[in-house]
Amino acid sequence: MYVLRKSIYLDKPTQNYLTVLAVDDVPEAMTSHVRKIQFPVNSPFESRQCSCMNVMADANKPCRNGVYPSRTAQDYLQVNELGHAIKLWIQKGFQVNKDIYKILHEQDPNVVAVFH
Image (cartoon, rainbow, N blue to C red; front, side):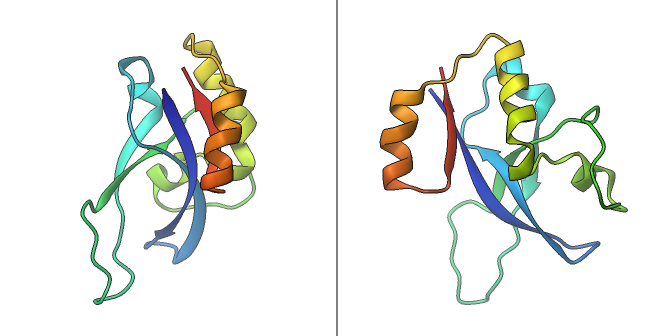
């Protein structure tokens, strides 16, 4: 089971906050559509076990408004591109699990999709 969540990411070169689509575990079939990025610590008082996250990305995604100088930040899939992200998972043979999604989304509103 693979859980897709929305997460806030600060793109340092542009100083823009992006609501990106992150996945905890990355199956082999999806490695070309995931980038591991450094997740900046926003406060010196904030402690975090892991400073990286896996973000959905697609260098060939449809154009969207806004230009980012960082090619990788431009490739990150944001929450408004959830339909495109789901299409990528389905094309790789995964299925959306609506029942598990409903359960997880009640516990964590950042959960946007679950695949198996």
